[in-house]
Image 1 (cartoon, protein in one colour):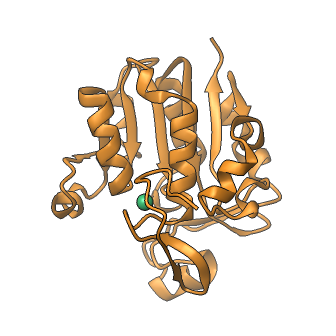
Image 2 (cartoon, rainbow, N blue to C red):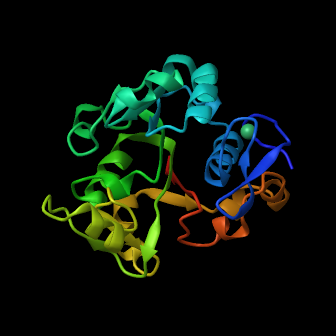
Length: 230
Ligand SMILES: [Zn+2]
């Protein structure tokens, strides 16, 4: 086994998952999968901004080194990244997308972010897609906690209720394994989906200790990749 992010071959167990955590960079399966996707798509050769929301620190550092000023890490709460040594700009997905020029971004990337956003998630995806330049990639992942989409944006709902209904104290919604395409497919008009099994050789998944369930459809462990048609 070898970590695709840092090259370490030392792994440790985490919460019952064998060899889940890389001892070199601290990455978990999902971050290693994300890096495999980023590497395979050769995004460091794209000379347009790379927008990374809620960046994974290990990946953010690598991308900042490769992309320089093209790399733009963002978060709703940028201060939490200060000790990680990554300079993150504040960005609110509900109000700031409109401030960015359409078709000006090369790559959009966000992993387990949309479930936290306190506004219409389909609209956020649609607006994000409008930022992409032709040929650009939208790489993202959401947790699936139910068969059907459920949501509650109320500020009255307690953290305990959110944990119970959506799987986490700060989640606004639960994405549905059965109706994700129905709910969010229209936001991807003009883009084509790139399947992980067509993109990455299966031996690379096992080498990075990424579980096979990550490449099944609508999995919390997976990463979805869409490309804007040229
Ligand atoms: Zn590593």
